[in-house]
Image (tube, rainbow, N blue to C red):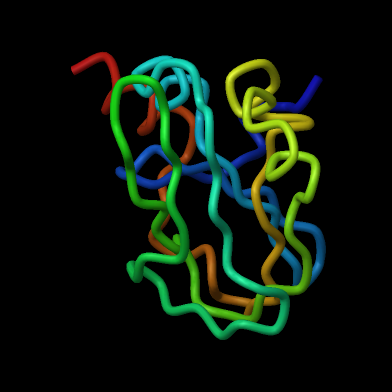
Length: 125
């Protein structure tokens, strides 16, 4: 299981895991629960330049359609094809198999993001 305390978070309910100059991005279990059953995921193409705060994709559920925002700026280096083929992975394993994309970023890209305690306070408030 993923160490949730080692992740960074956004107020838009995304999580970010850093490995060197690449980050893995997904939506949190809180967001997945609020969305309901995810039925469609649209992600940017590999090689796409993304800007922090910009819309980079879409997540559609039985309840609503939501936009996916880039929590960091960088270049998309990988997308999770498994989520495209089986969107329910976002609900079933949001922190493992339900990740969405990987982005190559600058060293200071995670500055200003929330830690686990701040994210828990946000979602319980």
